[in-house]
Length: 137
Image (cartoon, rainbow, N blue to C red):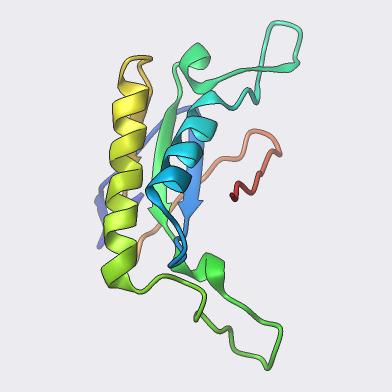
């Protein structure tokens, strides 16, 4: 991931997490999401079955803030972002979520990298899958 041409976050195998926050998100929902991500068994084992978690494969997490995930296009032709948390709520939620991932992943060797909240980021992704999941609570 690059901001202004400068590399700011990079992982090898792992998850690129596009994360958006709503005003209704809580400490409990952040903890659930961090635990769920770190425990997901979606990497192939010796038999090719999705049976291994990030810690089993030495994976990392690249967290990208994306308020546009809350874009609603039901009406008109321009998205509405009224369901996204405003920055004064979203920034602390984002920072806490990243801290939870780092705290809970540290013991199992999961590295967590980030971009910068609200910045224009260039994200390169090689999708070794295709596995794309939406996690919501």
